[in-house]
Amino acid sequence: MKIRELTTGDMFTVVGMLKKVTASRLSTLFVSDETATKGKTDEEKAISMGMLVLSELYDNLVDDLQEWFASLVEKTKEEYLTMPPETTLDIIDDLIENEVAKSFFSRALQVYKKMSALGNVTKKK
Image: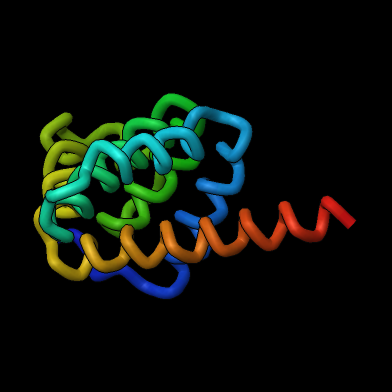
C-alpha cells in the first residue's frame, strides 16, 4: 500500500484537529510529555509525541482522523473504511517511522503551541 507524501494541506488538517481538541487533555499531554521525555533524543520525543497526538485525536476526532487517513492513501473515507485493518496500522507505522513525518509532527506541534499562546494573549486583553 502506498501512503502519499505529506503536504501543506496536511499541516492545516493536523493543526485544525489539534485546535479542535484544545479543551481536551492534549495540552496537558504536551506539558507532561516534555517533562517525561527529558534525556530522550529528538527522534524518541517525536515518536512519543506523534503517538500521543494520534491517540488523543482518535479519542476526540475519529471522523476527522478517518478522513485524513483516507486522504493519505488517496481513497474516499468509504473506500478507506472497507480496506483491511492493517491499512490503518501501516499508516500509523509510516507516520511514526518516516523521518519527514517525524519532522512534520514536531513542526505541527510548534505551530499549534504558538497559535495557542497567541490566542491566550489576545483573550487576556
